[in-house]
Image 1 (cartoon, one colour):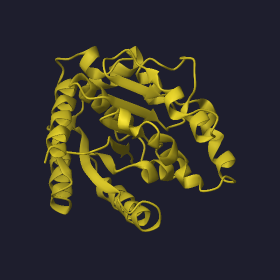
Image 2 (image 1 turned 60 degrees about the vertical axis):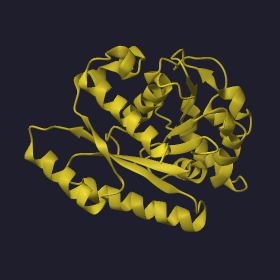
Image 3 (image 1 turned 90 degrees about the vertical axis):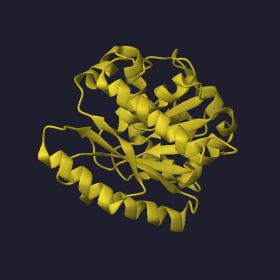
Image 4 (image 1 turned 30 degrees about the vertical axis):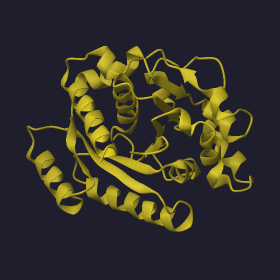
Amino acid sequence: MWDLSKIIAVANQKGGVGKTTTAVNLSACLAARRQRVLLVDLDPQGNATSGLGAADAPGGTVYDVLLGESGAAEAVLDTGFNGLKLIPTAIELAGAEIELVGMDERELLLKRALEAVRTDYDYIFIDCPPSLSLLTVNALSAADGVLIPIQCEYYALEGLGQLMNTVKLMRRKLNPELQVTGILLTMFDSRTNLCAQVVQEVRAHFPKEVFETTIPRNVRLSEAPSYGQPIHVYDARCIGAKAYGELAEELLERKDR
């Protein structure tokens, strides 16, 4: 068992791979299983924040936390979904890298901020921007592990190789304890041969890292954010909700090993 909360960065430098969908729905499904969960929206696009209906919520944001204008605890927002808390983002985060460049040990700002709250949660997830930016470096510096969603498409392994190299570099330079929590195959379509081939190839290259659970293409998953709800609240019976529930169970099983 982990003594402290497990901080997991959900990261991929490619967009459109289901990163935010995974961060929101895995967080919510774990919270529904009586885990204390904090989701940190580190993506300036703010899709995790809006996907939980918190786009216009008052109070501090992760931007304030990074600049030292707010403590992490003061920026935590109750999402209204049992057990799930959120540090929302703000549009100002898009320009934050310019402001952070001149700060001492700028790569460690998020890590230091989260130290104050990590014992309050069983899991802390960080939804990263779709780039290998200073924000993503902050997330990987703060994290114990990185969860990598990849779309079942032709170039999946190419992008995955780049991210794995980044993880190795982070271990050498900033965070020697960083582990790969798992690789998650998303947008799986059982009707296409290409999807099956991609799954087979990724599992062959990373047999220990790939989650057994795959996330299917599902219209309900793409609808849920516009209602500000995680999938298990929006439509608990759909295949997307079932898949993220299974992923939550798989992660809990790994934790207990």
